[in-house]
Length: 74
Image 1 (cartoon, rainbow, N blue to C red):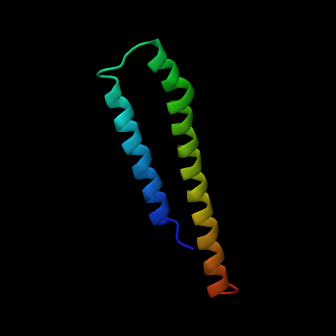
Image 2 (cartoon, rainbow, N blue to C red; image 1 turned 90 degrees about the vertical axis):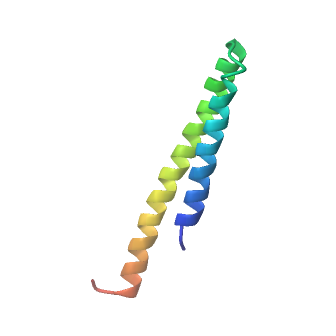
């Protein structure tokens, strides 16, 4: 199982969403935007970062398992 492509797509989407959100600050800067940013955007960004970290951990585990299955006794 390869995780690189999927991880890259998620990471790129996260960065793109953040850039677009930040750009809304040019035209929309009030308490509602700040609250939405804290409650929704920042939480989503944190969740995506946590998912990316989990993907990295899974990739490590799968790589190790693959190596152990290909080269038993190593």
